[in-house]
Every structure is written in C-alpha cells, then in structure tokens.
Image (cartoon, rainbow, N blue to C red; front, side, top):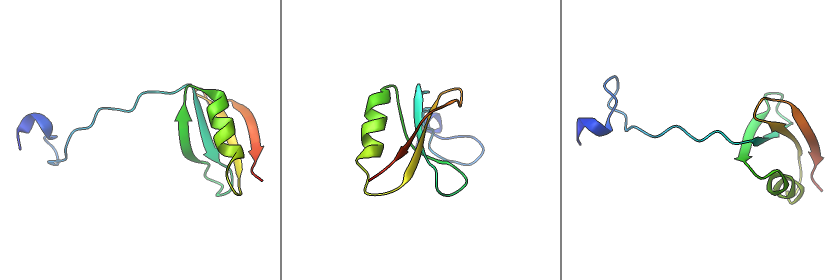
Length: 73
C-alpha cells in the first residue's frame, strides 16, 4: 500500500472527515445521548425516529440546541 493512503503514526488507512450536518438525532435512553443519525433534512430525522418500534430520541441542531423530543410508538 502506498504511503499516500496511510497515516504516518499507525499505518491506518486515511479517511476523509465526515461532513458536518445541520441536525443530529440522538438516542435519549443511555444517559450518554448516542448519535444515531445526522442529516440536513429535519423532517427526514423526525420521520425516521417516529417509525422506530420503541425509544426516546432528541433532535439537536449542529450547535447542540434541542429542537425536538420524539417518543417512538
């Protein structure tokens, strides 16, 4: 493998950083608020959370402001 595709410090393949999204959906049950999905489409995140079988979710802006809380059916 070419050195152009590995990091100097560990031989790990380089990956481009993820694009920052406008909204993120977090699971609100572990106390740690694990990020489940990120998107620029707020409605897509709300529909995805509502379609889950169970769970409580929080939708946040990129800055961390809570925009919605969703309780799945």
